[in-house]
Length: 300
Image (cartoon, rainbow, N blue to C red):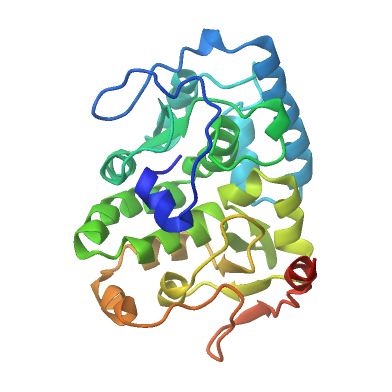
């Protein structure tokens, strides 16, 4: 789960929440009572079916860090995870915890949670009618997609650094640029692993169709990660991505984001955005996409 304005800066899309937690009481940190016992048998069953389907799809496609953590954190145990129990397991590994929230939270709250090793996860689960696609992140997206990678020390350190950098980006008026980093890594990132591309982005990991599309379709570009390039690149919110960026390792991502962003912000501040379908002469291309999927869709 991200923040309201952060996601709006990513998507500029309206939210349509079918969410029984929407009006749950909360304090300044927006944390609510998950009230795990209130989930119905049908909701637990929905989680189990989503989990089983997606676990099968990501075999051989997700990075090893994700697959190991899904087992270590016991995400398949007992239906929808109890975030308190899940937090106790995650805390022992990297010091992180998962906190329930009703919906997208304000930017400053979101960044404060990340900076303090807390991931705010939506407590509601998508309705049956929206099993395959939901506009607003729900508990399946947040827990299955995001939480396994927080069991990796390098990636979880990157997330904490991102949270600390978020408040500075807000003050500099460059949240748009920082949000693109989140989009193209945390949500839709690919990583090189033993010479092969693998998935680590939560938006891909929680989607059976994008899992296959991101790795195996000829349509999208797959481009080596470059921080300045990513911060200048726009993206698609309501369809598959036209471009996926590929990091060399989680250590390299962490090192890139431990650097001072001020020179990067200055470099990108007055430059034109790069459209999602564009490639540049300076890009290291792993796959020059045909964009056929997008052309065919536009034709209809």
